[in-house]
Length: 71
Image (cartoon, rainbow, N blue to C red):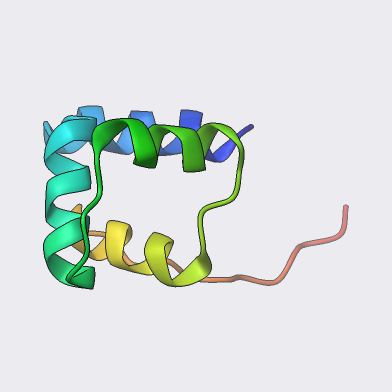
């Protein structure tokens, strides 16, 4: 599943839209973020790890790497 689809699910759960998320991200990083800019980064999968950690925090989540479990 793509990062944008995963993020959309979380955003629906916490009732935050992309415009609000971009605004909050811009405040945290102290630089302008538009909804379109964030949307493009997600769609093109060019979003940084740092940005994703901040997005997760904004949405009330932790971003963690967990080991794969082999089947």
